[in-house]
Image (cartoon, rainbow, N blue to C red; front, top):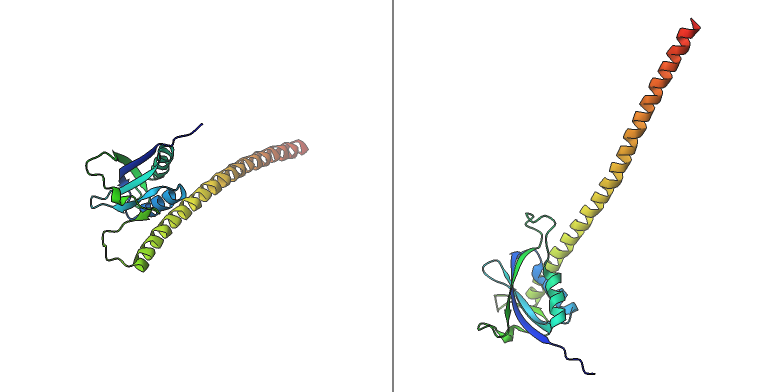
Amino acid sequence: MKVYIMTVKRRMVVKGNVQLVGFRALIKQTARNMRIRGSVKNLDDATVEIYCECDEVIYGEFKKKIMKKAHDPEDPLQINVTDIEEYKEDWEGFDSSRIKYPFDVEYEDTGIRPLEKDLLERSEMAILAMTSMNKSINNRFDLLSDKYDEFGQSMVRLERDIHEMKETFVRLTNHFVRDDK
């Protein structure tokens, strides 16, 4: 039995907090890991444009992976995708020349040298790494806070128990002192 794989070509316009947060680097790495052809670039209206070609099932997985929601949508340093507009290959303005292999980041300035492009991409990867580290550290602090909260509650209970034992001891002592007189 022969299996036919449906290939799709799409133009995606991603809206939200997607520029200056390492989003293009994330798209490039995700697309390359999934063996997707295409390109990504920033647009002047603060959106990001993606052209891609891949299997229809992989496209669905890719779209899910890039639909990033920020832990704090107000944080200007976190990726926060609010909407993705999709255009099929038969769309009048579809530019097939934007589908490249391997998947790549396009920059407005065509005079950019390879070293400069490499440095730009590395800085975007650094932004992603720092954001990920920050998230990881916050998660660990949350865990510590939970643990210390449990510890704090145990200490409050212990303090209350000691206070009750002290009061009981004082009452017993007073009882014996009165009985002794």
